[in-house]
Structure formats: structure tokens, C-alpha cells
Image (cartoon, rainbow, N blue to C red; front, side, top):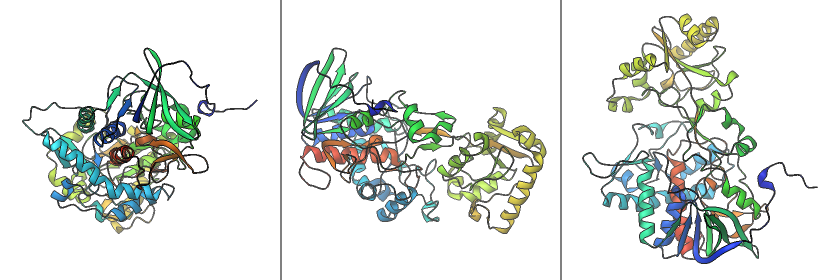
Length: 509
């Protein structure tokens, strides 16, 4: 008897109880960011498109969207070197990703996003660079370990506008893509789940879906685009592929049950390989104030034993990655009464733009239990439950490194070293929230799904979080907003290419 350790390893019997059948040019599975953009782009380019979505409506979650060298950046005087950006993203994944995919993204994402910038600005929305909350004005000049480009675009409603306000900024783009997709004839089948891909003669030729009335078959003349999301909601897959993600404090995924790895399972059943890369979970610390320990500011960080254990530069994966491997999965940021001057020194441009009363916000966080405050280090140690003598020794050592301006222990640049000298003293837990867990199918440079022998499977493409081989190991914020940005970039590129009967490299299908 053949043993299957996981549910996705045993292909089901083919579904034969087909109620209806139809044929279109392109079938898109999933109506999130990548799928809605793919459906719009294919329909806009002249294809007959059906988009299948298991929920009752399109979905969009997120704030920032990355584009490299868009017209918004040009207006702001921002230029990003696409070669340098690709090199750094590739290096963050320890060169396990597909460099050509990454390079395509850094070279084409601006052009792809510009199309939606035009549509949205014509409708009255404003698009700006989110370099107050997300990107740092001068981090593109830092060492490669921390280099961050000003790429996060944020879409919003202008003050005084009558346009409806959305909870998530990405919804403005997705809803625009949805409206324009429908205007170009794309059909969306909601409350309809994709059940099995159809592979005939070595090529994926369609999909069997299920709605309230039963099964139906949708054939695709030009191709099927998987845009079914990652594995954020699938505990079995997380345990198998990315167990570190189970150590987060919270999973902030939307919609619940939307990222079950459906595309991976269906792809596996027709011979697809899973991504060659280890997953890169999108894990960030949550902000309680603009100080945002571990996200916006860099402070001494200690584990439950009162010991320093990591580089604290607020480049988001660095501190959270270390915390999730710390004893007891807990760590604390520690700072002193000079936090305003230290924050200003760390982030002078951001500090100058902040309108919030920072001390009031800090005291509010203390009152609400998000921050700890004490007159002495010993009292602070008692509050956070770490050994007082160990914390005192750690602070003394850290202050020596700060005075020398040379962190020989963990390599934090002098700019981000903030000594802990005078009370009152503060602490905050380093939090870790899982926003998304991209993990997908093995694809080639055309985003075409491949088998275990690296051969492309005819008719099958993957975009968004089900596109594998892009991020690897640890999600980089070199290009902030990239998880959303690559969904738009490849959703549009693949959608347009299939409409023309081509791959991304221009070869015929």
C-alpha cells in the first residue's frame, strides 16, 4: 500500500458528474489582488475571461503596493536602480529564488502599476509614496543589509472627496480592476470553488468547479491562471513547510479561510512541483506608538533571561525572526527617558513629519498595558519577568558599545544604537504578526507552472502568493509593499500575455 503523509499527496478520483460545460480563452482561479488584476488585464487585451472565486465577492487586504520607478515616484524625484533592487531581493533569499522573475518584477512593476495609477487618478483617488509609516526617506543609502527603497505606494481618498472610504487601501485598486474587468466583458463566478484542474495530453485545458447547483467544467483555450493565494490558513502546510510561522502572536489574514493552499493542491494533483524555495512568511511587529519597537525604532532587546541576543535594527524581519527563536518565544525592547532624542537621531526625516504627541502616546501605551515603565532597571526587570542582575549587566555592556560607537557583538550601526542611561525606563514586548504566508508552485521565468523535472506544464500559470520561487526564507522589506506589488505586476503581465496567446518572453503558447 502506498503511504501518503499529507492530504495533498493523494490525487482524488476524477470528477465525472458534470452538469454544464463551456469554453473561454482564459480561466482565472481566485479574485484577490492577483486574480482580479489578471482577469482585468486579459479581458482588456481582448480575451474572453471567466474568473472563479469561492467567496461571495472580490477580496483585497493590505496597505502598501510596491512599484519600481512609477510616475508617482518620478514626480517625487525618486529613482530606484532595478538591478540593485533585484540583486538585494535575490540575496535576501540566499539566491534560492528565480532571479529572472525578480528582475522582471523590478524592471516591469512600475509600468504595470502606472496603468492603475492612471485609472485611479482619473476616478479622483490620490496615490502617494508611503515614506512616513513604511519606507524610510534615507534608508536607500544604508548598507545592503538594511537598504530599503522608497517603493510603497498608498492609494487613498482625497480630503473632502465624496468617494467611499475603504478599510484597506488595496481595495481601491482591486475594486477598480474589478469594475474595468467587467466593463471589458470578464465574468466573475462567486460562491464557486475550483475543485480539479483538467490535464489532457500533458496540458492543462480547464478546470472543474462547483457551485450551489453542482459541478461544471470550464475549458480554457489559452490558459488557466492560478491566483488562489498562499497557505496562511492551512496549519498542516505551515507545519510541513514553515513551522516557525506557528510561533507568531497573531495571524492577521483576510479573508479567513481564503489561503488554504488550494492552488498548490490542485497543481500537485496534475503533476506540478512545489516551490524550490523555503517560504518567506510576511511577519511584522505591531506598532503601539510611532516608536514601534522592532518596526520603526531600534532599541536594546533582551530575551527572558535578560540577555541581548540579536541585531536590533528595525528592518522588520530581523528582530521578529530572532524573537521567534528566542527562549520561550518572548523578548523585550528596552529604552530610557531620552527616547525622543534617540528616535530623532535614528529617523530625523520621519521625526520631523510626525504630528502625533509622542510622549502622550507613550504614556497612553503604558496606561493600556502595552508598555512597561519603571524608575529603576531593577523595577523594570521585575515587571517584565527577567533577572535583574542579568538585565543590569546587559545594559552596562550595551552602553559601553554605544559609547564606543561600535557594536562588536551584533553589528548594529552607530546611528541605531540608543544607550539606556537614565530613568524612567521603558520596555515593550517584541510582537510578531503573520500577515501573509506566500508559498506556491514551482514556476519558470514566464510564471508558468513546472513539474518535478523543471519542465513547464502547458496551459498552467501561477500569480500572487501561489507563485513560487520568488521570495525565499525571510520576507525582505528591501522593496516595501512587494507582496502586493508582485501580485499586480505578474497578474497583469500574465493576463496580457495569455490574451495574446503568448508567454512573458513573447514565445507562442
